Image 1 (cartoon, helix red, strand yellow):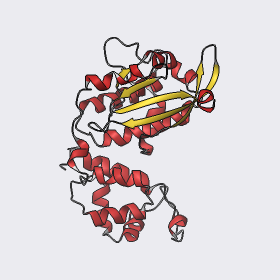
Image 2: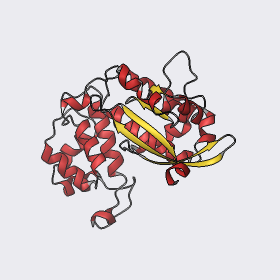
Image 3: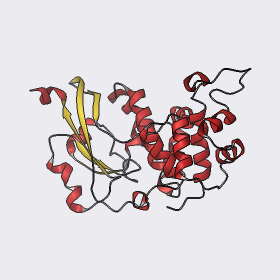
Image 4: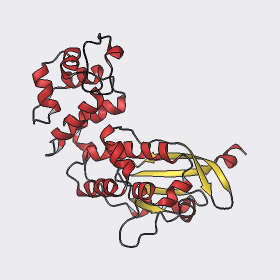
Length: 266
C-alpha cells in the first residue's frame, strides 16, 4: 500500500494524541518533575516501545520514514491501543492491504433497491464518507431534512452536525455525534487523497464548533449496530435498534436498518 502525501502528518498527529492520553501511572512510570504537556513524554514512550527517542520524534513530527510491523506493534502496545485504533495506526503507516483502500464503486441498482424492499423499517445505504446513496420513505420520516438538499448528495454527517433538527431528533446528540465523528475519522484516514473526504471534513470544521473541538482528540471507531433514542413528532421518544451490514463488494458501503424497540419486543 502506497502512502498518500498527508499520511505521515496524520500518523504523527494520531501518535501524539494517543501519547498525550496515557499517564505515567498507567504504564508504571514514576512521576518526575513538572510536565508541560499531558500524558507521556516522547522519551518515555520510546523507552516503553523499545525504539530510539530520536526516531520516534521524527515519526511524530510527520517525517516520511518507514516503519516495520514490529515497531508498529510495539507502539500500539505501549499506547494501549484497542484493535480499531491499532488498525488505524497500521493504515496510516501504509501497512494495510491495498484492497481495503480501493475507490468506492457506484452503488449497483439491485443494491440500491434494498431499502425500498425493507419498508416500513427505516433503511438507508451510506458510503464511506456518509453520503446517503439510497434510502426509503421511512428513513425520510425518521430523519427529517436528511435528503432535502437538491444540489448535492445527502450526507448523514453533514445532517448531524450542521442541521439543527438533528439535535432535536437525536435525543443523545453528543455521544451520537462523537461516535459518528470517530467513524468518519477512521475512514478519512484511509482516503487522505480523496477530495470527497477533504471537502466534507473542511465543511464540518467550518460549520460546527464541536467538530473543531473534537477532531484534534483523534477518536477512531468502526461502524457498528446498536441502539438510538429518537424523537418522532406525535410519538415522543422511541428506542430504536439499528443494524449495520457492510456490502460484500464494497465494504465501506453500509446498509443500516432501524427497528422500533417496542415492535422488536412484541
